[in-house]
Image (cartoon, rainbow, N blue to C red; front, side, top):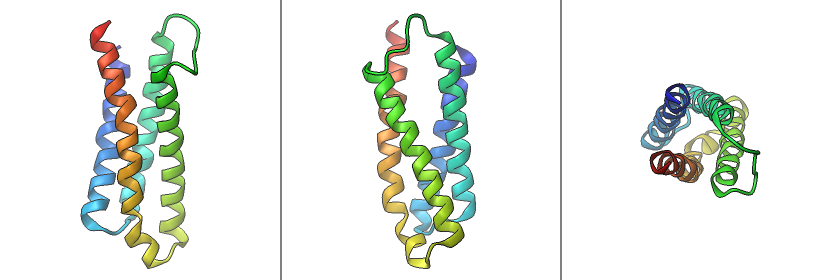
Length: 122
């Protein structure tokens, strides 16, 4: 449990760092993208570690599982899109990108705090 919660918390740290640094700079930089990918990596590994600890069958329709899957797919899409914008996007795209990052981050917080709540009430 300690390993999985540490990994998920590292996901929060790296993803938040990338999102907020980009928002403050109002310009998407390569290190922001690296932070998005690092956060995604820690989220996937932490989710996998949690899955290994889970008892019972995998239920995709359970609210925490569903919100977690949505958040993971949004993070992946966000990181891929950010990579494309940094490599081939216009300057205008790099200055507007921060608008979408905050939305994805806020959605990601739902399963993060939901999982924390579930963990504390069991």
